[in-house]
Image 1: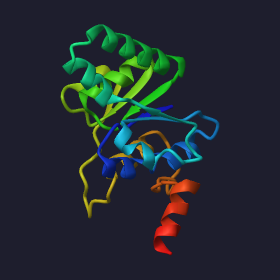
Image 2: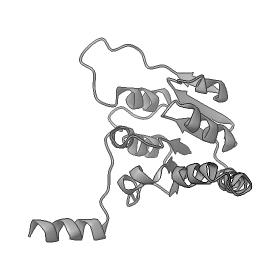
Image 3: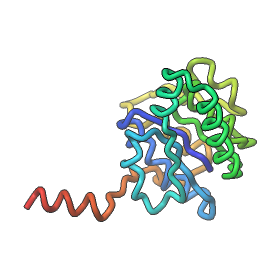
Length: 177
């Protein structure tokens, strides 16, 4: 399973609830998350993720500005190959933007679910999920909870799931001391 939530740190935090929900629904699955560098530290130490894939977006933008198009093409091709080598059967585009939909599609996953789908990104998906309108108070991360429910995750399995590594924990303790 490939989860795509590339950026927006708050949304990565809210989408992290998918990790335990997916583990509960698919306990033997290999779960990878594709993210941009700024949000990678939020997921880097999570023992429930099998792989964290960081898309170096800024590097691609730099190559574009420098007009090093051959190098840009090679890096994009290599990154696509890395995704394909994952042999994902399910890709969850939780961002619903063209950039995340493109990577979802390029992963080669036969089942690709787009959450909401802006910028016509849902056209690269095999399924589009638009969460039902709220009838009561809106819970944070309601769209991600709807995705977990759509996939058949057990009730209550969606809960935010961030893990702090030993080194950052040590730095925090030292700062507090």
